[in-house]
Image (cartoon, rainbow, N blue to C red):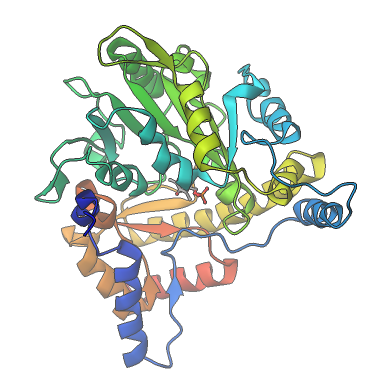
Length: 409
Ligand SMILES: *Cc1c(COP(=O)(O)O)cnc(C)c1O
């Protein structure tokens, strides 16, 4: 019999959202008449904007004609989209990248999970805690994370982000080769200032480390001083790979499109120390072997976000979600909760009252107010004692959920 990759067996079978669904279903069975409102799952609810829909219709029509039909596209993405990305997401911030440094993809999950393939399995990794689970799990699968002991992976350095340090991770006191940062952060909704991010870039430059920077929520930043891209920091081109996604920016969770930036200056070294290799080249090689591009229709849809109408429409939807966040913020403040985020991200990270555990509070909220939250501990050990609320719901549901919590509290 063939042997399995036993690293997969180390992964927890208890997927957070499956556990939540099970508990919610049990509640629904015993309370059939109650309508449960979810402030839990991180999917969007508002439809694609008209500019995107028009572009997709047009692209579909092109596919119907022999003269304009498109088959396999370029693996790095179509030039029209990569040019629009450079012109709109980077040039206005003084960042000058080459189209060959942009890799269009089918969303940030694939690339944040796959990127670790292009560096050796025995590099050390560091993650902020709590964290988006993809970063660690993808490293577990290749054997880089070690084994699970007392809720932590033995070969992973955790940078705790808690109220005690204001959700600003502290630099490690030892060398870490690969560092995952996500800002604005899922799940905490917090951000890093330029100075705080600069410390990480400088650490990476000093230690020849690589930063994997997930900017999936960049479009939600309201404060003009907060960096949208790590390349706003000097030197980041030499040490950082950045991931973008249209999923949260423009409701593309079902369309699938995003992009990854790998500057040509970013290099890693061979084991014998003799050769420095461009990671851009390795990722290109990897993608051309394992990936056949994002659909033409999705890429035309993404391009439409950068038109004047597209920009305005996307902003309206983001304003809608951030309007929900404001309602939730005001309500939580009134009730006396201690919470973070919700200003530059669609997430609120709330301390459980009286130091209760995340899961205990989850059940109390479900049974007391018929509202679903996400237990913070599901995102890592430092998430214990917190829960996450998302602003991705419908306005009326969001208001009703807060009304119920106020009544219950
Ligand atoms: C939602 C999300 C993404 C985006 O995933 P897609 O695959 O692009 O839909 C990436 N990173 C984080 C932290 C997210 O929450």
